[in-house]
Length: 190
Length: 295
Image 1 (cartoon, each protein chain N blue to C red):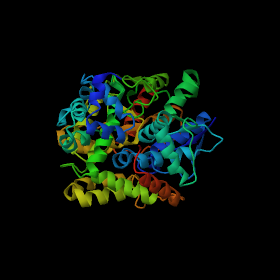
Image 2 (image 1 turned 45 degrees about the horizontal axis):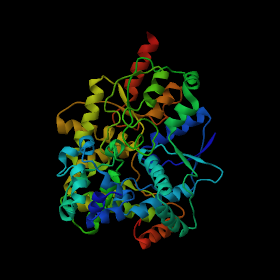
Image 3 (image 1 turned 30 degrees about the horizontal axis):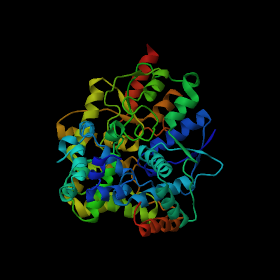
Image 4 (image 1 turned 60 degrees about the horizontal axis):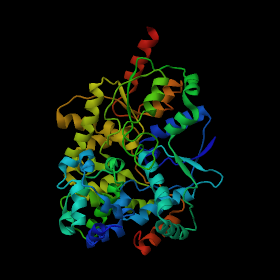
């Protein structure tokens, strides 16, 4: 490894991302070409494009990055990843930023963390997703007014047999929960 | 041929039409699908937002539950397909992650050796393992005259050595042209539908949906066929809201590719799940297909 990449690795925030995200160490190979931002379907709405975020991570601008809306506009379409000439796992880095931002409650003006929490809580409980439970809990607690607008659509889904009123529970939910508990206990991928 | 089958949560209810048509088409082609016993949700994009290791372990449980006598699993849903491939890939690339995921699985008395199960999409099976001659041979109702926009979405074609070219996939286009359809150009065919964005920020979500509907209309598609429950839901169920938001008047039916395959193979429309879509597909399809038959 040449000298300047060692220097780049000196950013504590970069080190944190490397621990948080499998393949995160590839950030040091970023050429700042901007293909990621140009490929992103939501790039125009982001405070900082993915390219800028990668540079900010290297420059240790932790607070600014964690408060940015960038990762919350990432829809996990992997366009940037499949086009990145340096094979940087940008979508997974966005997931990593979401997780750190949630742990530290640094995020601003987004309901995405509440949606993720409600979804995974239901998964942990039943082993399957439960759309009606997700929609009612998420909207009730986070976006009560938007719930009204969802009414007609929910009704047309229901009348076509596309919305179940009761959750499906897997048989070995205890086994699944033991696996999840162990993951929490191990506390991360590295 | 026998394959393990991972339907995923969407196919249980909101996209039951996909499940029904996948099973009907597989049955006709002699593909035996054995549902993974007691499978769990793949966590979609939400578990990776919460906890990376738990996300991987939750997904890996399904791979570990694949019948030891089977070495391939068919996953029709884009998120499920991507997640299963992603975790298998991450475990192969990263020994530390592999060890941790297996420590988690061990808490449930399970184990998974990465690489043991090959994750396939039904499109890939139909295209690669059956091919043009076999499919043409099965056609009862040619799709002649029907203008089809083939929509691949994002997660099936990207990025873990997915089922087709990530930029300009063509397999779905080829399959439907074999069946007689007039496959239209659809430049945005591998663009994202917005996924869960409808739940987070409607202006962004609606714009992503609008781009897809506008493009299909520009190329005069009668119908959009999709491979993903989320794409179907966003384009179909939100079409009226998108029209309201942009003062547009799109009425484009959105159906699963297996439903249209089933029509070409002469299967019963009810069994293929028609009637569950919100923008009705049957009138357009019947009009187009009988017009050709009468001519």
